[in-house]
Amino acid sequence: MTKFDTSIRAPSQPSISDDTAAIAALHTAFARQKAAFLEDPQPDIAVRRSNLAAIIDMMIRYRQRIVDAMHADFGHHPAPETDLIEVLGMVGRAQHALDNLESWMAPQRRQGDPALFGDAAIEIRYQPKGVIGNISPWNFPFDLSVGPLIDILAAGNRAILKPSDYTPACADLLAEMIAETFEPDLVTVTVGGVDLAKAFSTLRWDHLLYTGSPAIGREIMIAAAHNLVPVTLELGGKCPAILTEGALDESAVESILATKLLKNGQMCISVDHVFVPRGEVGRFVELSRQWFARHVPDYSRGPDCTGIISDRHMDRIEAMLSEARSAGCDIIEVEEGGVSDRTTRRMPLVLVLDPGPDLRLMREEIFGPILPVIGYDDLDDAIADINAGERPLGIYVFGEAEIAETVLKCTVSGGAVVNSCAVHGAIPDLPFGGIGSSGMGRHHGLEGFREFSNPRGVVVRRTQDEFLTFCPPFAKAAALVENALR
Image (cartoon, rainbow, N blue to C red):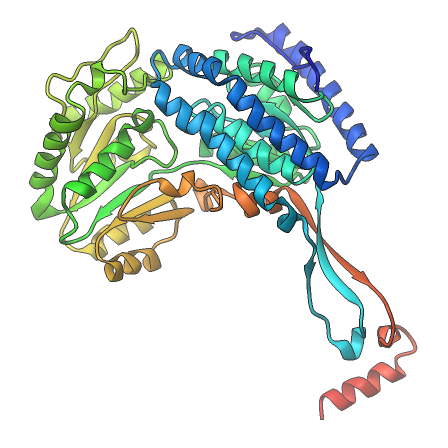
């Protein structure tokens, strides 16, 4: 373990010259890791376990500084939320990998026809891909950088991390943490702006992971395609919740609202909008007000409200709300006396009833404390509405098991939850990712290990096979085919 700073740095507000220096350092680090991988292409289980244990120690050791950095970047960020997701979440994922690593690494036996292949050993061996790049977003600066790193190291790879420049305190801290914990030819961090991110995606990675918007995801994929680099894209989307007939109660409302308040809506698997039977929209509003009054009466002024990441993003959310108001939509303030605070960038949650499909908040991922409530007359109409849009990262269905299963069978999404929201993203043993516009590929757990592994098919020839049947002269093959077709 090193005790000196080997990260690739550019200041929080990088200039062109700063990014130029960081890009040059990135290329040097990339070449160094490529060379190191060739020297040790198959780290054994003891090495991988040591790396995973180092992540656990790192997250616990830096816990308070992670809390402070999150607070600094968001204007206000609840410490318990940071502890649960950014710190303990990583500890849990690393421990899960440690507990299962031996079985993940074990070859998988496959079958072959004994008449042709005799007693050959046929198996899949999962080998490391090599050097992996990870471009992570601002909303979960440690969860989405260190989390995939767990899968990457478990699979025996090396990695270079590119955190978002929207969270400079977290990015700088991540660089320091990684530099103190790992040798630079195993893991390092590059910090910089847009030019660095663009250069990052053009390298000949053995695999590239990007988490962010679909628009940038397309650019990443195009850049990676020039080098035939395989990609994992986690792109979010407008995740709907559906309250089926008879499912509206206090528990359902609590699940939806509490999920929406997590990160104040700045989460890729947050509830983007909710479908409610038309006759129960008024009751949904009333139950929402009651829940706020009982559980978070001063939410926007209290310690549990996460600040919006930037003034620009806050302006965007307010513009969406202003457009809906100008269009004549009913705007419901469920928090009595809720206020927006530009100093901490905290905002209250509001409901928007039946917004038109042409409004920005129905066309774009909201990523903030606005919850559209859409009344429907028939469940098939709500399903058709979902299927008419892009496939979401998550779908949340409330109702009896049989009805919920109908919704799941008739829709497609990256993940799904019945009678709750977003919990699939918190389970280390469940693969996480999207489909279509919400992404491709998976990380977390076994699927994460395999995402960053090459499933190499291996045959070890032994005796009593008919291998030569496949080769000239083909007289024996002709006889074999004739017999098989009789």
